[in-house]
Length: 589
Image (cartoon, rainbow, N blue to C red; front, side, top):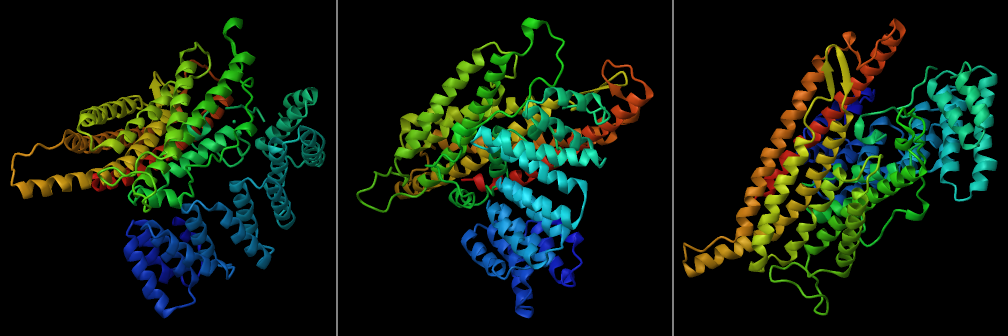
């Protein structure tokens, strides 16, 4: 909500208390304040949207959506309302509505650089590449800045990547992109390294390797260095890196849907707000393409250890397996939410004694798919590969299978097994956290070395915690009636010595261990923030290198960016974990 600082609207003073309440997580007070303001100023549209955000965050998605649409149909053009609606639609996982919002805004204010820019980004989020191209050029005509021109060029490249017809890609999209860049080259308007990289990418995709080599060896080729694996898990990178593999795009979608959901609200409400349909697989598996170039990094390994075509293919298989696991995880969580409501019809499937529906066919199918995918991944990780293996990343995929034993919690025979699984899960999470510990920037004898894998492990740990907390919340909803039933029986029979089922005590111990685990994680993140902030990079160089003054300056600039990227990543992860720690009280039974 910090975007309000840029707003010059006279109503900003009136709206500020609502923003503050939302920023501090006091959603009920935000709703009350918005109601008070709307009584005095009925036409203050932003107040209505801010109220909708408060309703969305308290689990009242339908009411929030209705309220937001009352404002959206008016096609507002004030910054406050547009930004607030954008935030709301993002939290609702409805990015397509943001495009409609800014389409209307640019119609009404056709010369607005800001609104055209927002429209381009809105198209980017939903993969409307042709409209991105048009929006980029419209923006360049209004404000002739290089980035806007090259946004349009990049949109053509994205159209070529996503095109089903390879001939169309090679004869239309890429040649047009090439001509657009050549025009800027001839007019000597190239300004940034990213523009040269884009030109190189286009030539390479057209198979014009001689021309691409000339670009690299000529004046256009800006001492550039390529870093362009695991960008989304290793730090924060600029918007220019828009051309990513389809597999990465889907993974980013998974992360956003998982991490940004409100696990303190009922599971079924969260699934609803994510527009998640467990029965439907929305990933076009047959259309996935590997757009990475694994040859850009020079390898000095012996020939028998260098990457070959087989390794590249296995790398794609690995990422596809990983994506399948993440997709199935999300869909299984969606199935769990459906289990909380017993069927209303007598002819429907039988319910268990604690009111939970018996295993539906969709859950059975997804569990079977998960088991098959886990088996494939296990076999894959047993092969000796030179590319990164999937083994470590499987850590957070296998341990929530146990959650589906909860369907049979009323069976005493299984309760000991489930209790042991709770204990095992706590140990696995602790092991994952241990793999995150260490310094992201390690300093030895005035030399620095990045350990990016630690941040990647930390991201996987946070994802795992989110999944565990989310489904543990469901566990609590299953166990509370069981505990309540036992207490009633105890009172009725007046038996003070009734034995507490092992699953109840195991769940309570597990909740406590989660609290300890999150505290450890937050302490580790804080220590890394302090370390990075205090680190003086001026006197450091990359490990094992003696550099000239020019190289040292370049290295310092690069390392400063890495340091800032790591620091911001840690701060965002820390804020997320703090919010998740606040939801632990909801796990109590």
